[in-house]
Image (cartoon, rainbow, N blue to C red; front, side, top):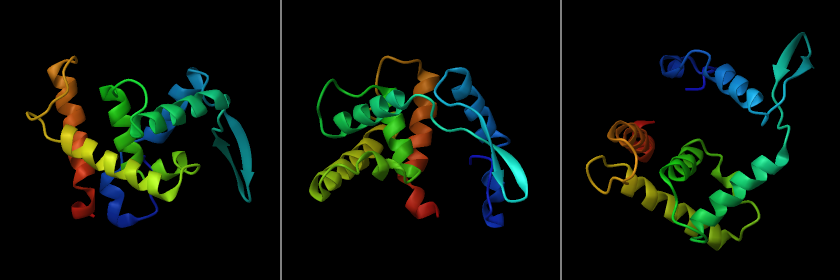
Length: 149
């Protein structure tokens, strides 16, 4: 869905220039910076992290939420965690934890997907209904990813 794929069978799932638009937004906010890198035959813009404290804060928030430390997760945090899980990058945030703790975290994510992935049931309150509907729809797709692929 990021707009780049080498698998022609999944080309219909692409969203146009999503990767570039997300990178531009994060550069504008100061999270990433733009660099030109030479890849053999061509130069390509890359976007490394400019402030590692932002990445560390997000990682800490994810780990604390999954371990039940701190306040209850917001919709935004829940969506972040479920998206990271669906993109197979959640393991990167959990590298410093023991194997049994990582299993507990993944079970918590599965529970979050079940809780927030059904619109109309257990919908978190506080946000406009349209936002809840979109978040629940996306999380529902994430929950069914294994069956879809």
